[in-house]
Image 1 (cartoon, rainbow, N blue to C red):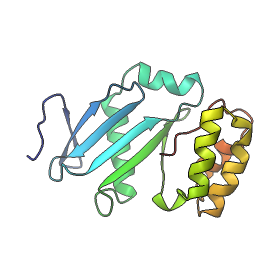
Image 2: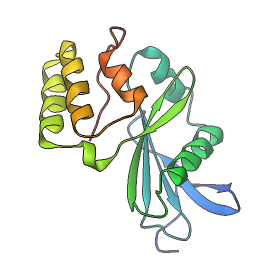
Image 3: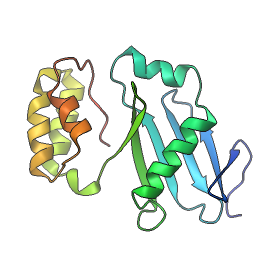
Length: 156
């Protein structure tokens, strides 16, 4: 074992052992596979309204962790990516994987300025930039174009 498991909880998914822990941030947890502890999965709430925040306020459950691991594996976390970030959306709970190719300089600048200035009315422009960068994820694009959104999804 290349890292200390102190403070990490153990979970078994498909006969593989993973370790997970919550962080100081109430809307983030990490997962590491036992066999490849250099791989890191970050799972964060989408910060979109109070409903999602309550998922993490109640505490990250083994079911949330298990589901996140399964989604990450399906998106080639163990095959291709040493680190990966998933965003958790509520109602129903679902995970969205961001692709590094979507993070063009235009997308990054737009997301940073929208967040810094609380200019959430500019989110449809961000959706267009994401789509131009190759994003075809309906959850992300619909969220950016939705009038019900209250805060931006962190893309970093």
